[in-house]
Structure formats: structure tokens, C-alpha cells
Length: 428
Image (cartoon, rainbow, N blue to C red; front, top):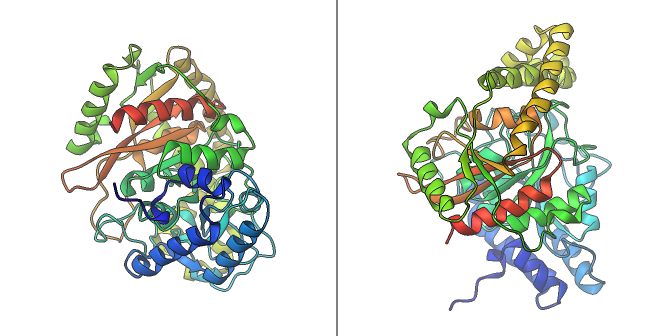
């Protein structure tokens, strides 16, 4: 049996070895940096890499006590997060020379837990739809998704075992799906957002990427301060609700095939694997999410809109103009509708522990001019529910495919335990 290279270890595997001092943080960092040097000229996952600083962090960790859950683990940080020792560009040339004076709270927490920050991963322009240079590691002619493009690609290509990302519409789940990694979006409000460029306070969520459910559970425990996220122990079969959503007709053949594969496999193990009754008017949530996001982004990016309009992409300018055309009374009504739906959707979890639902329309689209459609993620982002993308198959073009699990608000630990159970059975 071939021994895996250090950079190919999952985060949870590497964490155990690092805590036992069976491998060194410096050696793991070197292996990851070598992989970046080998591949990043083609993949372009990193906006900025600081090998000297990363190795210095690793050596310091090797010389001292075990710091925490992420001790010695290389970490990619989406370039939407402020970092005191690295540039932060928010995916825009406007901030090409921006040097924050402090780390985002989440970056500081990861460092406190022993993570080695390798560099900043590429994001789309202000985490919207204008792509950066990142390519899909499985086929560089295809998009890696967005907006957490570089984070998903870096984890998928074994450049780092963990990476931070954000989601406002589908920016964790979609790139996780396209790149074939596990993506975790926590419940809204579970992770402090200080120091991360805000787009839509009602929708923005900080999460991350790994190569297993245990990986993202480890990261999630640090981000939320809740050790239950990875200390789930033994658990039985979850009650799985099968929820195709009203947009199922837009799913392509690959997604339909993966759905059939998963539901057949899970039905053999989980007695409580049932179709979910579609809530009336659930399809309205797509437009509601768009309206809330558009209003809040237009105001969150007011400085850029008013002072640097000519430097923004036409796509972003169009969104900001549309957002400013929505008045405050309409937005207030939209927020009330959102709150009402969050209460209403909770009733689904009286019969189901988790909901199985599509992540994407299909495989990663060809071309780097766009990042794909977040259609199947928008409703869950609006509702603020935790979700996990699980990769377990490939489509017609041999690109990664999978599905997402959605959990009850605030019950992230139960979602992750169920996701681990489901993923084990889908990848056997």
C-alpha cells in the first residue's frame, strides 16, 4: 500500500498525527508549498502566497506545545477576509495594495487554534459573479465555481487540507460541488463576521472546505466555539427528507442520475428516508433571496459604488443599480417575509433530521467567464439553515458530482453527524 504524501492527508488525519508529534508542521507545510509550486501556475488558486511566513509559523508550532484543534494544519484564507500579515484585495483591483492592520476574527481564531495561514485564495470580485483566474483542478477548462473559487480549488488539488470561505447565495456549496470537496455553511449567525467584507448581513455566512466531513467539522468547531460539531460519537441512521425543490425540472441528467444513485443507496440503510411535502409557494424564496441580497449589497458597497463606479465590472454595477432602486419599506417587508419563512420551514424538521437536496444544476460548466448558477443554494441561504455538500460521484464529463444536506437552524452538530453517516454510505 502506497503511503500518501503529507499534502494528501485529510485535515482530520493530519491533525491526529500532528498532535502526537508523529509528523512535523514544517514538513506538512513544505509538502503543501511544493504542491502549490507544482500546480498553481495552472490552477491559480492563490491570490497571494507567503511561503517564508508560513514556514516560520510551522517551525514555531513544532517548537512549542500543541496549540489547539488546528495545530499545524495549513489553511487557505479567502481573499475576502482581512489579514494583518498578508494583502487583502476582496477580488478587486481597487484594493490591490490594501494591507489591513488586523486579522478578521475568524482568521485570528484559526491561528489561535494552531492553523498555519499559507496565503490568500482567489475570490470573485467582491464575492459576486465576476470571476477571478482560478480554474477547476479536475479540468482547467471548467469553472471551479464561486465566489470561494480559490479555497475550493486549493483543497481539491491537495494544496491545503482546509480553507475558509463565505456564502451569500451559493458561494461555498457550489464551488465545493464543482471541485469535488466537502463544503460546510454554518447556521446564519453562528460565526462572527468581524473583519470579513460584508455584502448582505441578512445572508452572509462564514464556513469552509475540507476533504471529509470530519475536516469541516474540525474547522467548524473552531469557528463557532462549539466542540459538539466534531464530538458527535456514535449515532444511528438519521431521518432523511428527500427534497428536490420546485426547481428540480432545471436539474440536468447528471444531477438526476446522482439523485437516483443516492436515494437508492440511502433507502437500503435508512428506514426513515421519505419524500418531503413541498411547502406552498416555496419557489418564491429564490426571488426573495435575490431581492434581499441586491438591496443590501448595493448599500454595503456604497463607497465603491459612489467613488469607484468606473472600476467595477458591468455585472456588479447593474446589481448595485438594481439594489438602489429597491426602497427601504420594500426591503423591510422582504425581511419580514424572510423571518416568517424561517419559522415556517422549521416544521419540516419535526419529521426529518436533515433534508437531502441538490447542490447544483449539474457538473461544472465549461469556460472561466462565469461561475455557474447558485439556484439550488439560494433558498437555504435565505433561510439561514446549515448545509453540507457531499461529493461522491462523477458526471458525464468525469467531473465531480454530489448533493447537499440541510439541517435545522442551530443544530449544526446534528447536521454534521448525519452528513458523516450519509457520506460514509455514499462513498462505499
